[in-house]
Image (tube, rainbow, N blue to C red; front, side):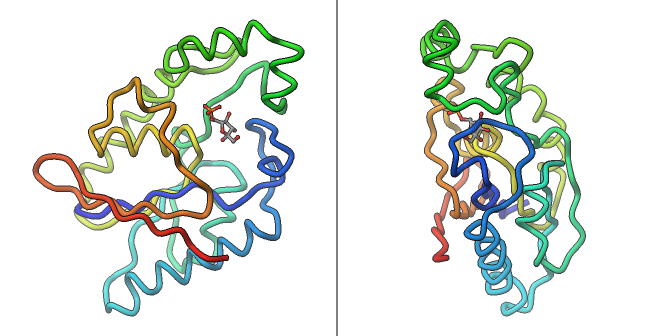
Length: 196
Ligand code: F6P
């Protein structure tokens, strides 16, 4: 498609506590973002007299709740779920550094290739996103993808021609929509931090 809209989910309970992964619900602020996102989509499409985009989320509660006010069907992809932090799921960066310092150290050395014990690496995420990217490339109309930090980084990197090594460090803040306009070579981006 020409336009791909990328966003992380609204703020979750675990964004507040700093815990990794899991399937937490949105906070009050996160739910406000869900409303703002729907207003934003409305202004980009409905008010312009255009058909709504396809909406793709992960299978996790926080992304599905984030799109719940957008009046269109959404497709939930397991491949859009957040990087699996394996034994570190539910932990904070601080507790990992204290209790599992080897993991913190090894990951820092090679964040792209480091695979959490019992979980995934960024490379694993990049590979499992292949079918999503293929399907995305086939779409003619716009698509809104609401996913997670690592997953949005990987999709953004693919379309913006960022190297795999840069991918794990791309800054994708919460409550921000990245609108990518694809061209023959590469894409252009507009960034919309939504007021909540
Ligand atoms: O903290 C939110 C989160 O989406 C975690 O679930 C995930 O493990 C992390 O971000 C990915 O970011 P990083 O690869 O920088 O740890």
